[in-house]
Length: 219
Image 1 (cartoon, rainbow, N blue to C red):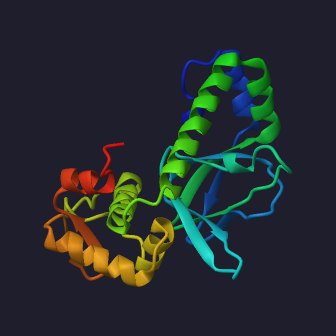
Image 2 (image 1 turned 90 degrees about the vertical axis):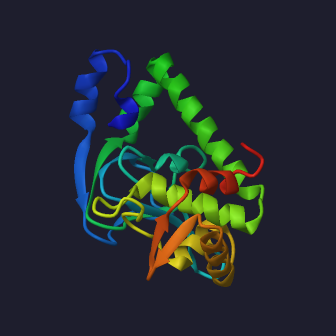
Image 3 (image 1 turned 30 degrees about the horizontal axis):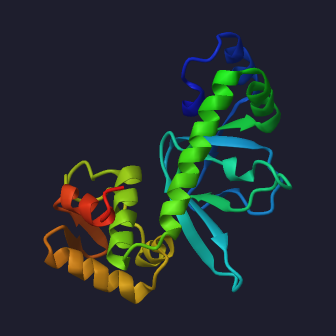
């Protein structure tokens, strides 16, 4: 698993190899659901995954997208040990699963592993705090497009086109704004020459300026 492929002791390799499972999911297939017992942690080997939760109205709200090398399931650690969010594949995906008992054993007996995981959780918290700081809508839309680019990258045949563009509804969910605001913001980014829109697809013409707009304070 990517988050374990570092400098941990050789004796852990056999334990990890014994416990891990390689799982495959089809398009729109659930990997785990909110309320499920936390049975382990996942790392994406291939494909794309959407992480969401349901609000009080039962609406499915996207909070993150994840791609190769990203970790899933860690939000289910602690508390009542259930997953507070759901994860399902956007396309055919393959993930590596590590049972929670193997993870706990490593965390309790390997200080270096525990420290790295603490840094991982701290980074996750920083990202969450940044999202709830509510920068301008345009910045939030730009940040969401950057996340789209980080996970999916560019199309192999069209170097400016995102390999996979999230739906406008998913963009509005991730940015914490309305569908109408997404349309207006995309139009504004297009006028600035930062992006180009082709049907449902988004092309990034000026990645540096998109980053500047997404981080107005330079954080």
